[in-house]
Amino acid sequence: MADTAEHEQGQKSESLTTVLIALAANTLIAIAKSVVAVITGSASMVAEAAHSWADAGNEIFLLTAERRAAKPRDATHPFGYGREAYVWSMFAAFGLFGAGAVVSVWHGISVLGHEEPETSYTWAYAVLAIAFVLESVSFVQATRQTRSEARARGLRPLKFIANTSNPTLRAVFAEDAAALVGLLIAGIGIFLHQVTGNAVWDAVGSILVGLLLGVVAIFLIGRNRDYLVGQAVRPELWRQAYDELNGSDEVERVTFLHLEFVGPGRVFLVAAVDLTGDDTESRLAGRLAELGRLIEERELVERAMITLSRSDAPTLDPDESATPATRPAGGRMS
Image (cartoon, rainbow, N blue to C red; front, side, top):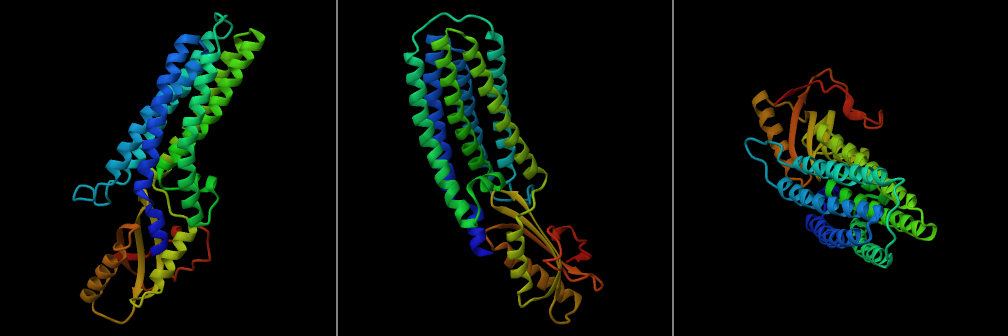
């Protein structure tokens, strides 16, 4: 499990770099869009400005998530602070929904059917082009990290993003992708307004950008919720942990094994095993404690809880079910 642990722990410095690049890009873009929205009065540009300010604010939440989740466990938090990452990422997703999606849709509906004064569209196109370049820089960084980590796990990038335990990378990737699509929608809306003279296209662009942000925000909220309530690890990681535990010289058989994420790249491992030999209960307790300590030396494992199996507990068959962790443990605490 060592190689997988190293990958699952992630490259924290790279995640931090990804968030910082996104923060710088979104802040510059938000300022530029806001100025041009005032100059042009474009509904689509107002929506895009709201989107970029929401993204910039969200990066602050994501930076907080990175910092707070890295705190080591203590007496009050025996499983560490890793789930803080999902809490603060959830705040960021709610911010994207409220400050981005709702504001964009509301503004688009409010100007629907109202004629906007004619204005120069040069500034609007210029800022959209600049924003596309800056968003692309941030998206390229997020994509590079995503492809690197997905390749290490043998997954496709989109599947990796949907299932990674790293909420900050998922948020930056999804928000940047939505931003690039949103810029295209806004540009089309402004162009149709310009060539037809009908402001309804601009308003529709604002509404579509808002709906896009709403979909992305709901996706991010759902994934953070999954990890907050307890997300089990991927089957291949479970199998690797089982093989290493079952292959230990100390372990005769495994009757239960469950791994659950308690933070980005951090899991809580629970297992029921029979140990080799026929020691007294006090010696068995010591051997179980030592086995748990050795498992916790793995970079991936935040805490390990190893119990003794009941004598009548069936041996765990890793190929019997797609969700082997649901089998009753039948063990007792050491």
